[in-house]
Image 1 (tube, rainbow, N blue to C red):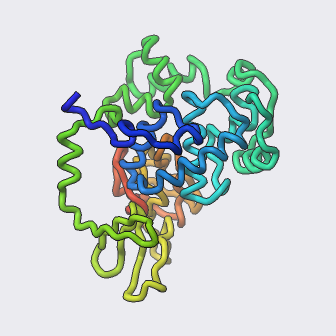
Image 2 (image 1 turned 90 degrees about the horizontal axis):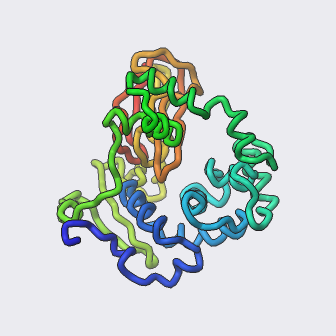
Length: 312
Protein backbone atom coordinates (compact mmCIF):
# COMPACT_ATOMS: atom_id res chain seq x y z
CA UNK A 1 0.00 0.00 0.00
CA UNK A 2 3.04 2.29 0.23
CA UNK A 3 2.58 3.66 -3.29
CA UNK A 4 -1.01 4.78 -2.64
CA UNK A 5 -2.03 8.09 -1.10
CA UNK A 6 -4.18 7.47 1.98
CA UNK A 7 -6.08 10.62 3.04
CA UNK A 8 -5.32 11.46 6.69
CA UNK A 9 -9.03 11.64 7.50
CA UNK A 10 -9.35 7.98 6.46
CA UNK A 11 -6.66 6.80 8.86
CA UNK A 12 -7.68 8.54 12.08
CA UNK A 13 -10.62 8.66 14.47
CA UNK A 14 -12.88 11.69 14.13
CA UNK A 15 -15.57 11.98 16.83
CA UNK A 16 -17.83 14.22 14.73
CA UNK A 17 -18.28 11.67 11.91
CA UNK A 18 -20.75 9.29 13.70
CA UNK A 19 -23.06 12.20 14.49
CA UNK A 20 -23.30 13.22 10.82
CA UNK A 21 -23.61 10.30 10.06
CA UNK A 22 -21.01 10.07 7.29
CA UNK A 23 -20.17 6.47 6.25
CA UNK A 24 -16.62 5.55 5.34
CA UNK A 25 -17.39 4.88 1.68
CA UNK A 26 -18.66 8.43 1.24
CA UNK A 27 -16.01 10.04 3.42
CA UNK A 28 -12.89 9.96 1.24
CA UNK A 29 -14.80 10.06 -2.05
CA UNK A 30 -16.07 13.48 -1.04
CA UNK A 31 -13.01 14.80 0.75
CA UNK A 32 -10.89 13.99 -2.30
CA UNK A 33 -13.31 15.90 -4.52
CA UNK A 34 -13.16 18.82 -2.09
CA UNK A 35 -9.36 18.77 -2.40
CA UNK A 36 -9.68 18.81 -6.21
CA UNK A 37 -11.98 21.83 -6.04
CA UNK A 38 -9.96 23.76 -3.47
CA UNK A 39 -12.67 23.67 -0.79
CA UNK A 40 -11.34 21.09 1.66
CA UNK A 41 -10.95 23.76 4.36
CA UNK A 42 -14.77 23.78 4.62
CA UNK A 43 -14.97 20.07 5.45
CA UNK A 44 -15.72 20.50 9.20
CA UNK A 45 -18.64 22.80 8.34
CA UNK A 46 -20.01 20.33 5.80
CA UNK A 47 -19.87 17.43 8.27
CA UNK A 48 -21.70 19.53 10.84
CA UNK A 49 -24.37 20.52 8.29
CA UNK A 50 -24.86 16.91 7.20
CA UNK A 51 -26.61 15.94 10.44
CA UNK A 52 -29.36 18.48 9.78
CA UNK A 53 -29.74 17.28 6.18
CA UNK A 54 -30.23 13.70 7.38
CA UNK A 55 -32.77 14.70 10.02
CA UNK A 56 -34.82 17.01 7.78
CA UNK A 57 -34.51 14.68 4.79
CA UNK A 58 -36.38 11.81 6.43
CA UNK A 59 -33.55 9.63 7.79
CA UNK A 60 -33.01 7.65 4.61
CA UNK A 61 -30.37 4.92 5.05
CA UNK A 62 -27.01 6.70 4.73
CA UNK A 63 -25.40 4.40 2.17
CA UNK A 64 -24.75 4.94 -1.55
CA UNK A 65 -26.43 6.79 -3.20
CA UNK A 66 -28.31 8.42 -0.30
CA UNK A 67 -25.12 9.26 1.59
CA UNK A 68 -24.07 11.24 -1.48
CA UNK A 69 -27.39 13.09 -1.50
CA UNK A 70 -26.83 14.11 2.11
CA UNK A 71 -23.24 15.18 1.59
CA UNK A 72 -24.05 17.14 -1.58
CA UNK A 73 -26.85 19.05 0.15
CA UNK A 74 -24.67 19.73 3.20
CA UNK A 75 -21.92 20.98 0.87
CA UNK A 76 -24.42 23.22 -0.91
CA UNK A 77 -25.77 24.55 2.40
CA UNK A 78 -22.25 25.54 3.44
CA UNK A 79 -21.09 27.00 0.13
CA UNK A 80 -24.31 28.74 -1.01
CA UNK A 81 -26.16 29.23 2.28
CA UNK A 82 -28.72 27.01 4.09
CA UNK A 83 -31.27 25.67 1.58
CA UNK A 84 -30.45 28.38 -0.99
CA UNK A 85 -29.69 25.69 -3.56
CA UNK A 86 -31.40 22.31 -3.37
CA UNK A 87 -29.29 19.64 -5.04
CA UNK A 88 -31.15 17.37 -7.50
CA UNK A 89 -30.56 14.06 -5.69
CA UNK A 90 -31.54 15.35 -2.25
CA UNK A 91 -34.48 17.32 -3.62
CA UNK A 92 -35.94 14.37 -5.52
CA UNK A 93 -35.48 12.17 -2.47
CA UNK A 94 -37.51 14.41 -0.16
CA UNK A 95 -40.16 14.79 -2.89
CA UNK A 96 -40.62 11.01 -3.10
CA UNK A 97 -39.00 10.29 -6.46
CA UNK A 98 -36.80 7.53 -5.01
CA UNK A 99 -39.46 5.97 -2.83
CA UNK A 100 -40.68 6.61 0.70
CA UNK A 101 -38.22 7.70 3.39
CA UNK A 102 -38.50 6.05 6.87
CA UNK A 103 -39.68 9.36 8.37
CA UNK A 104 -41.64 12.09 6.58
CA UNK A 105 -39.22 14.82 5.38
CA UNK A 106 -39.56 18.29 6.86
CA UNK A 107 -42.51 20.10 5.13
CA UNK A 108 -40.52 23.34 4.77
CA UNK A 109 -37.67 21.55 3.01
CA UNK A 110 -40.16 19.70 0.78
CA UNK A 111 -41.73 23.05 -0.21
CA UNK A 112 -38.34 24.61 -1.00
CA UNK A 113 -37.30 21.55 -3.04
CA UNK A 114 -40.55 21.60 -5.00
CA UNK A 115 -40.19 25.30 -5.83
CA UNK A 116 -36.53 25.13 -6.82
CA UNK A 117 -36.70 21.92 -8.86
CA UNK A 118 -40.11 22.62 -10.37
CA UNK A 119 -41.40 19.22 -9.28
CA UNK A 120 -44.47 18.22 -7.29
CA UNK A 121 -44.21 15.69 -4.44
CA UNK A 122 -45.14 12.20 -5.61
CA UNK A 123 -46.14 8.84 -4.20
CA UNK A 124 -45.68 6.96 -7.48
CA UNK A 125 -43.30 4.01 -7.56
CA UNK A 126 -39.85 4.37 -9.11
CA UNK A 127 -40.83 1.97 -11.92
CA UNK A 128 -43.86 4.12 -12.80
CA UNK A 129 -41.73 7.25 -12.84
CA UNK A 130 -38.97 5.71 -14.96
CA UNK A 131 -41.41 4.31 -17.52
CA UNK A 132 -42.86 7.81 -18.00
CA UNK A 133 -39.47 9.54 -18.37
CA UNK A 134 -38.51 10.03 -22.06
CA UNK A 135 -34.86 10.59 -21.09
CA UNK A 136 -34.47 7.10 -19.61
CA UNK A 137 -34.42 3.60 -21.02
CA UNK A 138 -32.46 1.37 -23.38
CA UNK A 139 -33.60 3.16 -26.54
CA UNK A 140 -32.27 6.46 -25.26
CA UNK A 141 -28.93 4.85 -24.36
CA UNK A 142 -28.68 3.20 -27.78
CA UNK A 143 -29.35 6.52 -29.53
CA UNK A 144 -26.60 8.25 -27.55
CA UNK A 145 -24.16 5.49 -28.48
CA UNK A 146 -25.09 5.86 -32.17
CA UNK A 147 -24.65 9.63 -32.07
CA UNK A 148 -21.16 9.20 -30.65
CA UNK A 149 -20.15 6.33 -32.97
CA UNK A 150 -19.69 3.92 -30.08
CA UNK A 151 -20.34 0.15 -30.15
CA UNK A 152 -23.87 -0.80 -29.09
CA UNK A 153 -23.20 -3.55 -26.56
CA UNK A 154 -25.05 -4.53 -23.40
CA UNK A 155 -22.18 -3.22 -21.30
CA UNK A 156 -22.07 0.14 -23.11
CA UNK A 157 -25.84 0.53 -22.89
CA UNK A 158 -25.66 -0.07 -19.14
CA UNK A 159 -22.86 2.50 -18.72
CA UNK A 160 -24.72 5.19 -20.67
CA UNK A 161 -28.10 4.42 -19.10
CA UNK A 162 -26.67 4.81 -15.60
CA UNK A 163 -24.05 7.54 -16.14
CA UNK A 164 -25.49 9.54 -19.08
CA UNK A 165 -23.00 12.11 -20.45
CA UNK A 166 -20.26 11.00 -18.05
CA UNK A 167 -20.70 7.46 -19.40
CA UNK A 168 -20.16 8.72 -22.94
CA UNK A 169 -17.00 10.57 -21.88
CA UNK A 170 -15.74 7.40 -20.17
CA UNK A 171 -16.34 5.25 -23.26
CA UNK A 172 -14.61 7.83 -25.49
CA UNK A 173 -11.59 7.86 -23.19
CA UNK A 174 -12.11 11.52 -22.31
CA UNK A 175 -13.05 11.19 -18.63
CA UNK A 176 -10.71 11.64 -15.71
CA UNK A 177 -10.29 8.65 -13.41
CA UNK A 178 -10.52 9.99 -9.86
CA UNK A 179 -10.47 6.82 -7.78
CA UNK A 180 -6.74 6.11 -7.43
CA UNK A 181 -4.29 8.58 -5.86
CA UNK A 182 -0.55 8.02 -5.77
CA UNK A 183 1.62 8.94 -2.80
CA UNK A 184 4.32 10.36 -5.10
CA UNK A 185 1.84 12.73 -6.74
CA UNK A 186 0.54 13.93 -3.37
CA UNK A 187 4.10 14.57 -2.16
CA UNK A 188 4.92 16.48 -5.34
CA UNK A 189 1.80 18.62 -5.02
CA UNK A 190 2.55 19.36 -1.38
CA UNK A 191 6.09 20.51 -2.18
CA UNK A 192 5.18 22.57 -5.26
CA UNK A 193 5.75 26.31 -4.96
CA UNK A 194 2.35 27.79 -5.75
CA UNK A 195 3.09 31.19 -4.27
CA UNK A 196 0.40 30.54 -1.69
CA UNK A 197 0.39 32.36 1.63
CA UNK A 198 -1.18 30.50 4.55
CA UNK A 199 -2.78 32.59 7.31
CA UNK A 200 -5.06 31.89 10.27
CA UNK A 201 -7.73 34.38 11.35
CA UNK A 202 -9.88 33.67 14.43
CA UNK A 203 -8.88 30.02 14.28
CA UNK A 204 -9.85 29.65 10.59
CA UNK A 205 -7.09 28.66 8.13
CA UNK A 206 -6.90 30.44 4.77
CA UNK A 207 -4.69 29.88 1.72
CA UNK A 208 -4.22 33.05 -0.34
CA UNK A 209 -2.71 33.18 -3.83
CA UNK A 210 -2.25 36.68 -5.30
CA UNK A 211 -2.72 37.30 -9.01
CA UNK A 212 -1.03 40.65 -9.60
CA UNK A 213 -2.28 43.66 -7.66
CA UNK A 214 -5.99 43.34 -8.46
CA UNK A 215 -7.02 39.77 -7.70
CA UNK A 216 -6.48 37.00 -5.17
CA UNK A 217 -7.76 33.45 -4.73
CA UNK A 218 -8.75 32.57 -1.15
CA UNK A 219 -9.35 28.85 -0.47
CA UNK A 220 -10.13 28.30 -4.14
CA UNK A 221 -12.45 31.31 -4.53
CA UNK A 222 -11.27 34.24 -6.63
CA UNK A 223 -11.82 37.86 -5.55
CA UNK A 224 -11.23 41.18 -7.25
CA UNK A 225 -9.32 43.38 -4.81
CA UNK A 226 -7.93 46.88 -4.42
CA UNK A 227 -5.48 48.45 -1.95
CA UNK A 228 -8.31 48.68 0.58
CA UNK A 229 -9.71 45.48 2.10
CA UNK A 230 -13.12 47.15 2.35
CA UNK A 231 -13.22 47.38 -1.45
CA UNK A 232 -12.78 43.64 -1.96
CA UNK A 233 -15.64 41.87 -3.67
CA UNK A 234 -16.51 38.42 -4.93
CA UNK A 235 -16.42 38.01 -8.71
CA UNK A 236 -19.58 37.85 -10.75
CA UNK A 237 -20.05 34.69 -12.80
CA UNK A 238 -20.11 36.89 -15.90
CA UNK A 239 -18.99 40.31 -16.99
CA UNK A 240 -20.89 41.98 -19.82
CA UNK A 241 -20.31 45.15 -21.79
CA UNK A 242 -21.62 46.75 -24.94
CA UNK A 243 -19.02 44.90 -26.99
CA UNK A 244 -19.88 41.45 -25.66
CA UNK A 245 -19.17 39.52 -22.48
CA UNK A 246 -16.70 37.36 -20.64
CA UNK A 247 -18.20 34.22 -19.11
CA UNK A 248 -16.54 33.20 -15.84
CA UNK A 249 -16.95 30.06 -13.75
CA UNK A 250 -19.37 30.70 -10.86
CA UNK A 251 -18.01 27.70 -8.91
CA UNK A 252 -14.94 25.46 -9.02
CA UNK A 253 -15.44 22.26 -10.99
CA UNK A 254 -14.81 20.36 -14.20
CA UNK A 255 -16.21 21.20 -17.63
CA UNK A 256 -18.79 18.42 -18.11
CA UNK A 257 -20.36 19.32 -21.44
CA UNK A 258 -21.06 22.19 -23.83
CA UNK A 259 -24.67 23.09 -24.57
CA UNK A 260 -23.71 25.01 -27.74
CA UNK A 261 -20.85 24.76 -30.23
CA UNK A 262 -17.87 27.08 -30.46
CA UNK A 263 -18.76 29.83 -32.94
CA UNK A 264 -22.53 29.53 -32.40
CA UNK A 265 -24.67 32.62 -31.97
CA UNK A 266 -26.29 32.55 -28.52
CA UNK A 267 -29.03 34.58 -26.88
CA UNK A 268 -28.88 36.19 -23.45
CA UNK A 269 -29.82 33.70 -20.73
CA UNK A 270 -29.21 30.65 -22.94
CA UNK A 271 -27.43 27.71 -21.32
CA UNK A 272 -23.95 27.42 -22.85
CA UNK A 273 -21.91 25.04 -20.67
CA UNK A 274 -22.38 22.74 -17.68
CA UNK A 275 -19.81 22.38 -14.91
CA UNK A 276 -19.62 19.48 -12.49
CA UNK A 277 -18.33 19.61 -8.93
CA UNK A 278 -18.96 17.16 -6.11
CA UNK A 279 -21.05 15.04 -8.53
CA UNK A 280 -23.40 18.00 -9.02
CA UNK A 281 -24.08 19.82 -12.27
CA UNK A 282 -24.04 23.62 -12.49
CA UNK A 283 -25.37 25.11 -15.75
CA UNK A 284 -23.83 28.41 -16.87
CA UNK A 285 -25.85 30.84 -19.01
CA UNK A 286 -24.81 33.50 -21.50
CA UNK A 287 -24.89 37.02 -19.98
CA UNK A 288 -25.33 38.62 -23.41
CA UNK A 289 -26.23 37.78 -26.99
CA UNK A 290 -23.52 37.23 -29.59
CA UNK A 291 -21.08 34.74 -31.07
CA UNK A 292 -19.44 32.50 -28.46
CA UNK A 293 -15.83 31.33 -28.36
CA UNK A 294 -14.86 28.88 -25.60
CA UNK A 295 -11.50 29.15 -23.84
CA UNK A 296 -11.79 25.74 -22.12
CA UNK A 297 -12.25 22.20 -23.33
CA UNK A 298 -14.31 19.30 -22.03
CA UNK A 299 -12.78 17.79 -18.89
CA UNK A 300 -10.84 20.91 -17.88
CA UNK A 301 -10.74 21.66 -14.13
CA UNK A 302 -11.53 25.31 -13.41
CA UNK A 303 -11.66 27.52 -10.33
CA UNK A 304 -14.16 30.24 -9.45
CA UNK A 305 -13.59 33.24 -11.71
CA UNK A 306 -11.82 31.21 -14.42
CA UNK A 307 -12.75 32.46 -17.93
CA UNK A 308 -14.91 29.87 -19.73
CA UNK A 309 -15.78 31.78 -22.89
CA UNK A 310 -15.86 35.11 -24.66
CA UNK A 311 -19.00 36.41 -26.36
CA UNK A 312 -18.45 38.90 -29.16
